Amino acid sequence: MIRKIKFEDGRKKLAEGILSLCRVLSLEGQVLVNGTFSFSAAEVAGKLEGSDLYYNQGIRLCAAAINEINQTTGCGTGESARLTAELLAYCERKSASGISPVLLARELKAAAKTLEAFVRENAIPLSDACANLVEAITKDRETAQMVVDGSNVGELVVKDSMFGKTKLEITRGMRLDGGLAVGEEGTVSDTLVLIVKNPITSFSGIYPLLQKTEQQNLFILADGIEGEALTLLNTNVKQNRIHVRAMKAPGIGRRKEDLLEDAAVYTDTVVFDGIYPCTMEEVSPAMLGRAKAVTAAGSYTIIKGNTDNSRIYKRIEAIEERIRDPKTNYYDQQKLRERIAGLMGCAPVIYAGGYTTAEAKEEKRRIESAVAYYQTMKQYGILKKEVLNNVPVGSEAERFLTESMKQSFKEEEISAYLLILMIQKICGLIVMWLTTGAVMVSTGYDREDLELIKGGVDIERLRG
Image 1: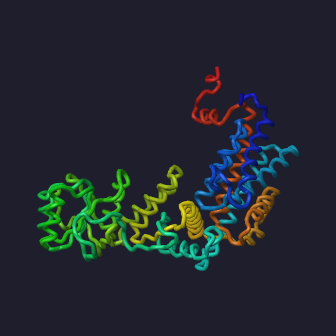
Image 2: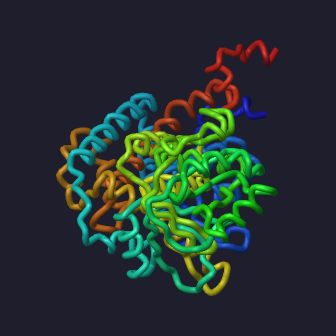
Image 3: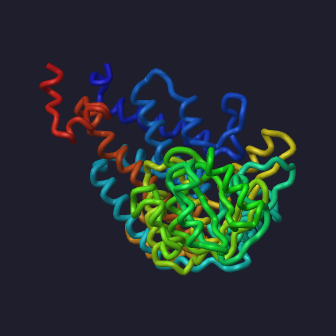
């Protein structure tokens, strides 16, 4: 049983689990998992687990820390694994010499705090000529330059491509995937925008608004254009009685609702549902949105609105908060970044190409990692490796941590945020092994027990 394991044996097994994962992840290149190459700590960890619960717990704790670093910055897996192994070996030696694990954890936390403050103070802004910093990830100079160029003009998004060659496309305006249901392809300027949450099925319901807009251009984005409304709108457009273009909003469920709200904010209007803020018959031209231009190009439509709008900034801030939420998965983060790009009126997209499906997936993974790494450097700056020689070390723990950080990296310039995350997560992992992990083993409580204790549950009573 897990509670019968002695203190020293249990802590040793935790360390063995951590080191087993670090040995694999610190290797050069990628690891073959289920027939495909991977550098994901979580995927590799699942293949290393055995029958011992504490050994598995060490693997999982280490994988969680390294995976968070990798997902946030797009790289750092090998560096984090090497740093973890170095710090764990150091703490094991110090513990064997008789130093209290709690005292050692306190020294390591103080050293991490000192080094983190030094990195923040000495980080410098990212220069324009920086494609070489992401070329090591993309494995191609031209692709690295695409990452830099795309990131500098807006919120860069990476998508799959049907072509063999990777390419960068920059769309000016909010792009809506899908063709027109009403109207012809082309570009019209100075357009009124009506956004409707529900399908438009009745021509009589929208006719009063068409009378008020007279000969003005009108673009309708709705949940659908169906039945009588679709037939009569197309008939009147062909006879040049009205100047209307209409399309069905792309997406389903929550994503469609978010897109309609984004389009409404982007064009400075609201989403009408037939009740709020008024019925369709009562809608006036003054309540509609405004677009500088609407371009319909077959498979997509682009709206150019006014990006100088306080509502847009507030909505972008709300979306960024969702991106930073740890509960938001990677796929949702990508979709949220696409929404930000649309609201900013500039959507750079890199289409990851490859001559086989495997090549395309590998190319996309590399580019996504490069984009994440470049974005952290752009936001938090970089640190020159040689600057770490000037860290004002005091304690032995500070000196060892600084030297370990320098040994973990090969590049001469590093993302400051990657360094900060490594300091926080890896030192936090080792401190957990020294303190919380020790308590788990010495008291006979496993991880689930500790969570129950934190919630106020009487574990001893449950045991009885």
